[in-house]
Length: 238
Figure 1 (tube, rainbow, N blue to C red):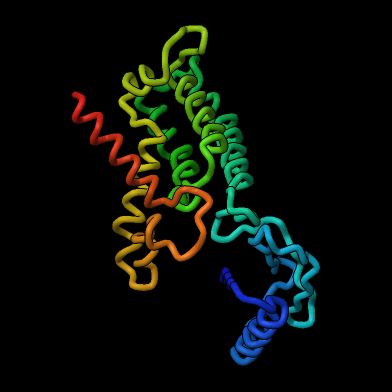
Figure 2 (cartoon, rainbow, N blue to C red; figure 1 turned 180 degrees about the vertical axis):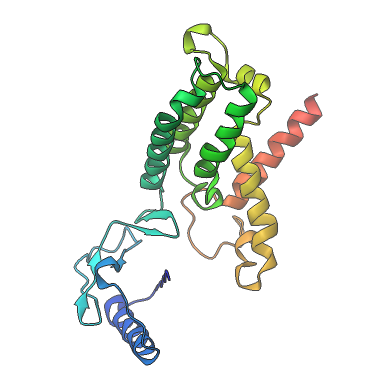
């Protein structure tokens, strides 16, 4: 029930409107209806100065937005995923408040039960679509990583005054660091899952040499290579 369409071309308004008209004809043919109030478009190009694009669907003007939500992921015009990460942090805060009586220090639940609650309620929020927003800046991702550490400290019943490091808490609770977990999922997604489909095979093979456009940020492929290299160096040193 969610449809997304993208265009990259000159004369954006004319070509986009032509595509929208073809979509409308298809919907009319099969007697399908669209919710024009929920239909939005976004321009993901910082160089495009003309922000007064006028597009219509079913004779209703489509609203332009700086961010849109598709399949649970909030996309912004710069693909920084800043707003999406803010929403993740908000969900973590709301969930921690809801479950506070069960995971706080005075709770009668065992540590094992608290960890089960964490994996059932917190981890899905953190890991959902992680390979997509993993290219966000380190500063943005650290905001949810810090919130993750606070929740684990709450489960372990320790505070910052106890001078216990996050590494010690992870070892005590026998839990993998969330950064490493998300990085492993991202690596698996782009090296295995993406290549199983012919239409997305090229995404997992992009690197700094064969990329067809000007690169301003590190690609997922580069991040995975750096992570693997660091792991190899650690093993060599040991």
